[in-house]
Amino acid sequence: MPWASRWLHWSVILYVLALGCWLPVVAIQVRLRRLARQAMLAETPLPPDYWRWFKVWFVLGVPAFFAFIGIFYLMVVKPL
Image 1 (cartoon, helix red, strand yellow):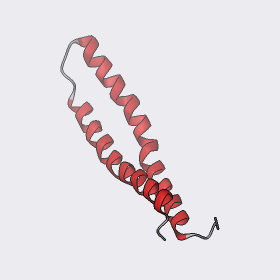
Image 2: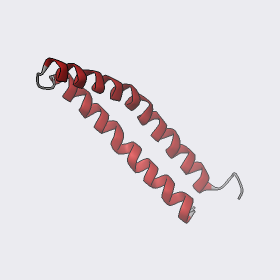
Image 3: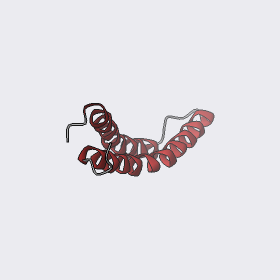
């Protein structure tokens, strides 16, 4: 398999996109867990800050998910 294949270049680009989305997600998940634990211990509803970070988490997850779907497609079909 030549390294100059276009499908391989696109899969690497999609990997970089997915990684760029998911690295911040890890830090956000830690923050969400901390906020949820604090709310649980205090027996209070989740704070607005939790929901703000959850939206960011979700928005970053959508392009990463589709990037991984694209990578899977490119590696199976190798269309380019």
